[in-house]
Length: 377
Image (cartoon, rainbow, N blue to C red):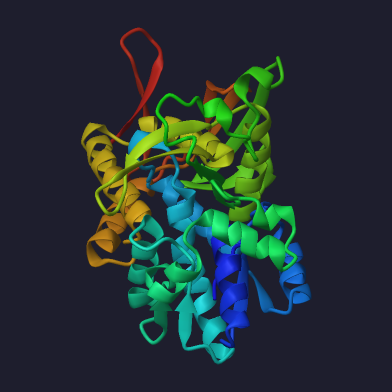
């Protein structure tokens, strides 16, 4: 069973084991820190008598985020859907581990009829069709045992789980190295301010430092390869951007979005590193893509952002859209300098553009300045 440490998945795993089901908890390290760090969660589950295995998927998560950034694949309201992105990594990254452990069922504790049920069903069918995907919250025996999150909270408290796991009765979070999603009964009320949320990665802008912090990122073919002059891997790039963007108050957004099943929900999202790298890459695309390419890229970005949200990254039309975006982003090589100040990203400079076939070439404005545009080769 996939166990993130959230209230519902831990309650399901504990109760199924109590009923005699052979349960192994697979905890993926996606870079999340709450409700417990992954290694601490595995230790806790073991103390409670559950079999638990930790699988490090941080590198795979970061590589997907590089693609999400290159494609500018945000969702409605322009937010980075880190929850949807992680489901693809979880299924792809854990399928072989489940098989090697003798598991024939991939179980998760996401709500029946919700976004994640659809995502896991789609990725299960596309990536691991030999594993049955089981959604406990569509089964009557689970619904009879736990009527609501308060029931789950009481159950885990009674069997000795700490408050970090058991006390999320009306508030839920989902996080990884890219960001956190916050949902609650309170946030569903449109009169509730986003200030009801306690950010886990980002400072509120008004509490950020009262000075501009310089930040520089080098992109090659749309991929971040250096931060502040230091070569970085995809994982290192996201982590460095998280630090800089988080302390300077980037990315907190509250969105009323259209869910997979056609209903709406309201959540608050934070993804400081993705927002910072995404803004820098946008500046580079402004000079590396011509008008037609820019219009096409915008169309592809909307399509790919929806695919991330709906769990459709492995579908044929998505693969085709990504291939087209790969062609466009191949022109994006250069170094972007920005200043960070209280939630703002201030453009400072763009240097070291590479003059390769199909990329930006320097030309003259009539006023003697410089511009960049794409010329055929």
